[in-house]
Each structure stands twice: as structure tokens, then as C-alpha cells.
Length: 465
Image 1: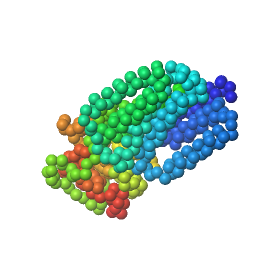
Image 2: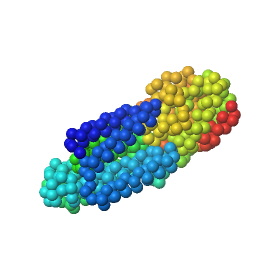
Image 3: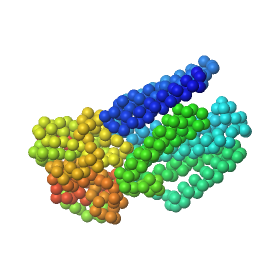
Image 4: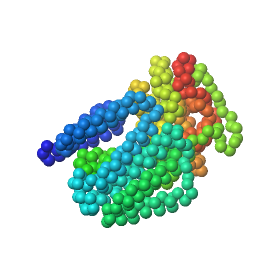
């Protein structure tokens, strides 16, 4: 295949990737965006195979077997994974990109001639720099994503793990990595390469374990950005234009998304990296031990109030995802609409445990896109609504973010559900949310707590109506 044709095909795949990102920016066009992404990846893979076609049958067999095995595993996981486990699945896939970057860098070090970057002991200086950057970012992405996966999957505590003098330790390790990279570029020492790899793997763990609670969605988007830059590093090592472009797109979009998420929480990116606030707690709300009165309600109470309302705004959260209550919730909304009630859904930027988590779940339940609104578009409507129905959300509706300067989430934009005529909270218990912070809204006079499983509660409300 000629260089001009290769460049043209890579350009086409890059354009398709850009269209894919644009499509994925909205639930309405997300399916089309997925198709663009798949088409772009297919063109890029086929072009790469045609460009560097293996000369032996054995090599072709290995390539086809690798694609077949990987594709089968990916398809199986995609079909079986529940939507509630999507955040940890994304983290797991990010780790594979990081691991691939490390392995490609190692392959380039031991067989540079195969990559066209020189010979053993005489690798081009620029290639050594690219290799070093790729292995550092890749290793950090790998272990950081593994820790994120364990936290999100409940195999490790969601609470931040604060090591003594952690900032000093991280700075020292980072400085040592820089020094070792300089030494590696000048010496091409295999021992230094693996030392850099091990230190990068370590710092990947150290920068993620102190992050927890409400900062986990930012971690997911941050690791997404890291995986993109790791892929771009692989592209430079392989001299593959498509991989460089793709990696840069993912890296840049992940970084922008991280910024948007931090803005949605009124937190700086640096403050998240230096250690998130909060963590899961099992204790009751009201950390001072005071037993505060709450108004408990039943499904029948909720059904009566909502059926006789003019406007209901539904606020979904991670509790809805855990209970897989999205289908029952949509059925409840359908019944309300049949009774002449106006129904809207309010989505907070960091609701759930990954960006867009609630949007995906509602789309899965075939909730009309025009009924779903983001925080800045819906907040002004709570004051005109009869009921704010909060199902599984907590921190994103906490008024302490607006009126308690001592609260760790002070300044974070939240959904102002307390302005509705009645606030209904569907929760398993009065325990604090993922940020580990008590929600004073539970004790307001216009709040009704509906304690129980979110799916069963929604189903019972439907029966009550």
C-alpha cells in the first residue's frame, strides 16, 4: 500500500473518530457516534495490517487469533455486564490500554530494529524519550485503573486511604522518575527502564488510593485521559499516525471532561489529585450521634401525592443504578403522565460513579430524551414543582453545599430539590451518601423519606396509583 493511500485512510479514520466523539456528546446521537467510532477503528486496523503485512503464515495466525480472542472476550463482557457495573468496566478497560503501552515500550527496547528506531545499544534518542514517557503514563494508568476498579467494584473500601506524608512521598518518587528517565535516555539501560516502570506502577497506586467518595467520577474521566495519552505514546513508538491521533483525541477529551466534572463539583483538578473528600460510611445520618426526627412515608402516600400533582421532577442517583430501578421508574413516570402530571428528570453532572451514568441508564429504560435535563437547565424549575422525587441520590441534592461553609462540599453546584412543594427521598436507610456527609434535607418539614429498595418502592408506587 502506498504512503499516500495509507495517509488518506488514516485521515478518514481520524475524521470518523472526531465524528464519534461529537455523536457521543448527546444521548440522541450516541448510537450514531458508536457506529462512526467502530467504522473508524475498522479502517485503522485494516490499514495498519495492510501497511505492515506479516511475511509468514505463523504471524498471520497469531494476529488473527489475537483479534478473535480479544474480540470474543470483549463481546461477551459487553453482553453480560450490567449497567450498574459500567464504571468499573471502564476502569478495567483503561488498565488494559496502560498495560499495552508498557508492553509496547518494552518490545521497542528489546527489538528496536523491528520498530525502525535503531539497533540494540544504539536506539535513537528521541525514541528513548518517547519510550520513557509512554511507559510512565502507561504504568500509572494501569495500576491507577486497577485501584479505581477495586474501589468501584466494592473489593476495596471506597474511603480515601491517606498515607502519612503522602504528598512528600509522591513528589520524591516523581522526581526520582524524572532523574531515572534522563539517565535511561543517555545510557539505554534495561535495568533503569524496569526501575522506571516499577516506580510508575507504584505512583499509580499512590495517587488513586487517597481519592474516594464523590470524587470517583472525576477519577474515571481522568484515567480516561491518561489512557489516551498512553495510546498516543504507543503511536509515537510504533510510528503509527492513526494511533497518535486517536490517543490525542481521547487524552484531550478526557482532560476536558475532567475539567467539566471538577467545575460541576466546584473543585480544582489539583485538589482531586491531591486527595478526594469523603468516603462511604455505614453509620446513620447525623454524625454527631444526635437522633433527628424524620417524616417517614409509604408507597401509598407517595402515589397519592404524585398522582394529584401538577409537576414532578425525578432526580436519579447511584442508588437507582444499584437497584436497577430505571425501568420501574419509567413505568411510574408513564402512569403519572397518563394522569396528566408533567414529568421531568434532573441530572447532576456527577450523579452516579462515572460521567453520563444516569443518562445511559435512563436511555436504557427508553426514557424520552426531551424529558431529561441537566442541572443548569432544571434548577430554576424546582420552585414551581409539586414533588421532587429523589431516587438513590444524596450528595448532589445536599443543601449544605450552599449554606454550610464548613461542609467539604461547600460551593459545589447541587440540585435545589428542597424548593419543591414536597421532597421524596427513596433510600435504603438514613446513611450518608458516597461523600460520607450528612444531608440535612432529610429532616426538613417538607421531606418524606421512603426507606427501602428503590426498584420495589417504584413498583409499589405504580400499584398504588
